[in-house]
Length: 448
Image (cartoon, rainbow, N blue to C red; front, side):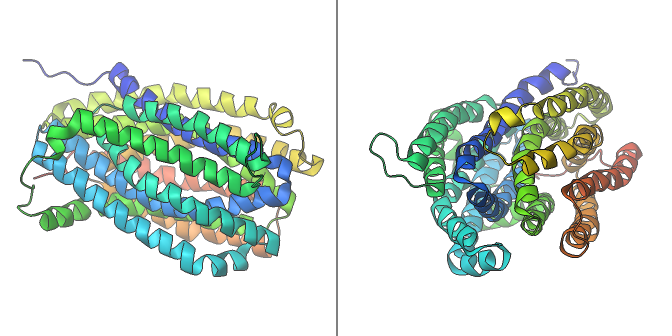
C-alpha cells in the first residue's frame, strides 16, 4: 500500500477546531475586558495585573500539556494504546502538581507580589480578590486541558472546540450579570468577572470528562504501564516532555513578567496594551493552530516511521502559512477601526496610544508565522532542546532586559515597548530557519 503524506486539508481539519478553540478562549478575555471597561481604567488595570499572574500559572499547565500532546501524537501514530494511557495519566498528575504550586503562590505570596507591582492600593486589592476566585479556573483547566491535548493528539480536535462553545456564552452572560448585579444577583464588580470564568470553566470540564468517559473509557482503563510501573512511566514522560514544557513556561513567564513591568507605564498606555494584546492573540492563534496541527501530524508520521514523507508535507504546510500571515495582517489592520465602537468609555489618550501601535501590529505576523511553524516542527522532530535555547536566550537576554530598560529607566512610550516584541521575532528567525533547513530535526523522539 502506497504511503501518503497528509494534505493541507488534513492539517486544516485538525487545525480549525484548535484555532477556533484558542480564539474562543481569547474571546472570553476580550468579553471580560469589554464588560469591565465601564468600571474604569483602574479596574481594567487590576484585571490585567491579576490576569498576568494567573496567566503564568496557567502557562505552566499549558506548557506540560503541549509536551504531552506531542507524546500522545507519536503514540497514536505508532498505534500503542499503553503509551497513550501512560502519557495521558502522567500528564494529568503533572498538571495537578503544577496547580498545587500555583495555588500556593496565590494564597501565600499574592499580597507581596501585587503590593510590589500595583501602582495603587485599590488596584492591588481588586487584583488579589480576582486571583483568589481565579483558583477555581486553575483547578478546572488542570483537568480540561489535559483531556484537550489527548483529543488533539489523537486527531479529534472538535470535542475541545465544542466544549468552548458551552463555556463562552456562559462566561459572558454570567459575568455580565454578576459584575453589574442584574436580576437580583449581587453587584460584584471585577470579582463578578472572575466568578463567571470559574462557573464556565467548570461546565467545560464536566463536558470534557463526559466525552472522555464515552469515547476513551476502554483506553484509559487498560492494565499496565509503558515503563512497568506508573512511577517509571511518569518519570519517562517528564524526561521526554520537559524541554517542550520549559519552552512554553519561558514564553509564558516572559510575557507575564513583561506585563508586570508594563504596569509601571502610565495608566492610559498600560490600558492600551491590555486592550490590544488579547486581540493580537486571537488572530495569532490561527497560525499557532496551523503550526500545532502540522507538528501533531509530523509526530504521527514519526510514530509510523514514515520519514520519507516529512519534507513534502512540511513544505506544503509552510507555503500555505504565508497566506495565513496575509489574512492575519488584514484582521489586525481592521480591528483598530473597531476600538472606539467597542470601548466608548475610553479616554482619548488611551485611544491615541492604541492607534500608535498599528504599524508594528500589522508587520508582526509575517515574521512570527514562519517562526511558529519552525518551532512546532522542530519539537516534533526531537529538537525541543534547540527550540528551548532559541526562545530562552532571546526572551531572557533580549526581551525582558530591554522592556525593563525602556519602561523603568528610559520611560519610553508604548510604541517602543511593542517594538521589542517585533525585534525578538526578527532575532529568533535566524537560528530557527538555519536549523529547519539543516534537516537534522528529521528523527523520531519518543515512546519506546
